Amino acid sequence: MKLPKSFYTRDTLTVAQELLGKVLVYKNFKVRISETEAYIGAIDKAAHCYGNKKTKRTETMFKEGGYAYVYMIYGMYYCINIVTGLLGEGSAILIRSAAPLSNADEMFVNRYNISREIANKYQIKNLTNGPGKLCKALNITKNENGLSLTSENMYLEDDGFNVNQIHKGKRINIDYAEEAKDFEWRFFI
Image (cartoon, rainbow, N blue to C red; front, side, top):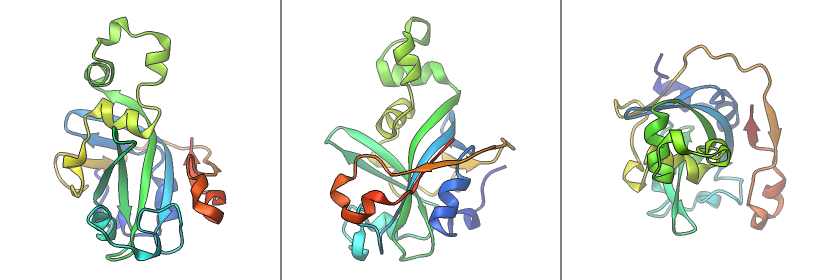
């Protein structure tokens, strides 16, 4: 079942946990979300839009929940986020990791330029276990920034997968964010 717009327009920390186990569908790819990180611009020094700072880069974060926010890090990797909350809030959830469910063969070509048959254990383990790796495997780029998650090309669905336990911890690679670096807004299964 495709998630409705109302799923995304709720509290960011709640949605970040409820995304775990859901399926991200992009074109012909499907992956099960296994790790997320929440970012709330109004109070979070790690958020791109901290202090409600609206720029060309962050304008998508201020949309009503239910859009993809895609940006580049280190000048070479894309990251996909799910915009949450109400119009003007500036909140999003980074998809840190996911497990392939369909078209893994094409993901190996996108990520490593090899077929799955010749991939080694390291390549198999690391196919989609990071935000940049995930976007490369699914061929998600800046072109998908602002795409509605109720479109036919990209959406999330609930296939009934049962998440038994959600773990939480500090977010990764945000040491610059002062007290926000200690927020336990990373959720994983």
